[in-house]
Length: 489
Image (cartoon, rainbow, N blue to C red; front, top):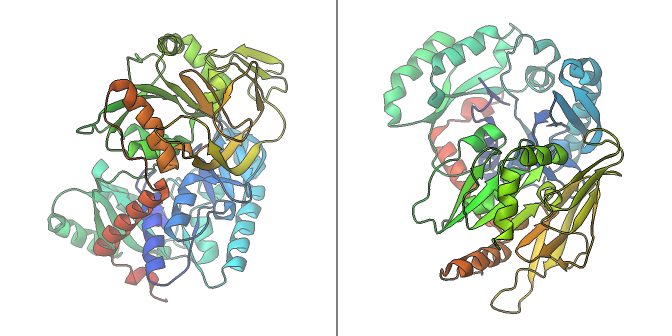
């Protein structure tokens, strides 16, 4: 099990690295996080919701992501409430103050069911567990579903990750160990120092001090990694502010208050010629080469935020000038003319609101959630040749959207995307992962700017993701000694 001294210590990527290293050793690693809180989600082949970070770990392990790997997913929706997902399906909503009273037992049952599924389907596999936040939040320890309760239940050997970049790494580690109960202390098999800058030998004295004063071996010191990896939460998103040398296109991405599925933007982040600039309500949109409106967990609330600030009006003026706008899922809904909520799924029942009016669409929230992987053929944008481009991704939304007047379809499948002049949108999460389609869309922007066209013969983004995971695993194997962790007690 990979535990952390705090949120953001690097547990998710260290778990992914561990999965890839074990896979290279001929094992079948089974990534598992009992409970995750994130609006960055993935939909598995069976139509179940799970956190994107567990999907990433599954790919690192060479497995198809399955919601059993993340049996409890909490999706924040504002006002201290979260949608509760058990084994891929929405089962209700919870307020923070009542969560453990109402959902502890059902959550533990879902976690045990997910474990049972994985262990039955992969009888020779090795579970690689990821904790959540800190394992020693003393006010939560008796009701903690996903840290030491799970570690004790499975007799997991734990590695404790501490982020030295934030400072106070000795206090992080010593304080965490001091707050463990006596029955939990023997579970910690090793320490890992993460995000160390400079020569590792400069920390040799610190390593010796930790081992002498805690009795726990330091398994490794991971260097600061310059590679860009998919983040798990908005904390990491806020840290992604590096400027690229030689970027030729600037894309403004609306940083909505209820932003979700921002991993959709990872393929654009990875394009050397593209610079993303995140714009919040209240900030100036400027004149980027295109605007992307990403997914939203609370579309009506984000619509109010845009209309209550100047950003909504700025986007309308930007589109009226003929510049490109592209929306994904909730972003698509925001671009429409009308959003109706007859059942009060996002607020008061019977609510109807005018959208930004950039696409002739009407969205009605209601019915069951659309959860499925999709494949289609793109009809837009047009390229230099007549070759059809395949698209693949997944739907994850409530409600249905209809065109109020004739509208160009984005792809072959009706209801998956629409185009009206310079404004387009789709329900397809992962649309930018298709290398040829992404490059064709970027080339449409480059043509407007008089830039030479990029090669559209590009592999799927998963190829690049695999290379990043390999480099992460290379660094992990070089700097971390796993033997004390893997040795049979």
